[in-house]
Image (cartoon, rainbow, N blue to C red; front, side, top):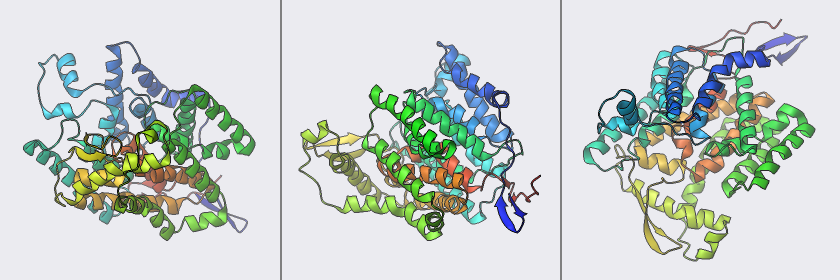
Length: 461
């Protein structure tokens, strides 16, 4: 909120309740649900069910969305490799019904599923600042992804494990449209701080084993923001040294995310540079940069000189040309040879392995957010979907006025630039949905968005 103080305009933030007692009162039940995932079987299955129900409650029964609660509920799936149980297991074991072969089994009974399926209901129930044009782009994107799922079922063109991936991508993108209603008891920044510190601590002790570790390493610059340069540097050493000693695989993707994050946040810390980085032209250019780089790599010729020796020592040449480019080429060929309106999701890719000089079947996606979404939901739906998240990205960057806003936004941007270009995860429910959930939170301008209007600023006491 803004107030006038002796002719100067200063920014004041809502008062935030702090203290261990308040934290445990607010989040204690969610810590309990998290720990229940790691109870001995079959008790752990009830922890999964509890997190599923709690996610639906947080998303639909409450007008105020707490980011840290969502993070705690998603953490077993996106960071700790506890994927949960399948819906057909729940039907047979809990409800005592004979095993049935239905499409229900395609949707696992996990927190990412619960969070994803509540997105359209949340968008309908709680109005936000999102323009009708933006919502008018997302709903056709979602509808076309559902139509693609039905088309895949009818034609049997999709693989059994990937038939829902198109719908999950559309739902992940829809997370940026979720509205936020904040009370005076808390604010988005305090919740994001909890997410940042929890992620980095879990990474340092080796608990993060899933794709959230890529987001965790991008949040390193936040340490300097929260603790200052001296303490922040010491905290960084204490976090990273155990990871290196433990033998954590710092791939080029992890290292790239962290280095790009530090560089962007160093620039954003300067008020002069931040003013340029907040401009819409700059933000749009940053958003389309991975797509342009992807097209540049695809248009280059084949690198036959990649050999088996480069497979043993991971280096940038192999990562891009030997590992990613053949998959990108196959995905690009699949996209241009597919209908623009309706496609079956979950189709395998066939590409020439440059190491073994053979044709491989690949079921693990295009490893590129743009190629993966385009091949899973079609060109038309993809254009709509990227227009929605691009709008949210530009809005969030343009609204990042305060230093904390800027550091968090550009930390997340480093994930999009590096991991978005080399992986699929940002286009899926789970890690991707939580990522766009955070972008949507920053887009809502420190959470003062209430049911389609802005909260009227009140004088600070």
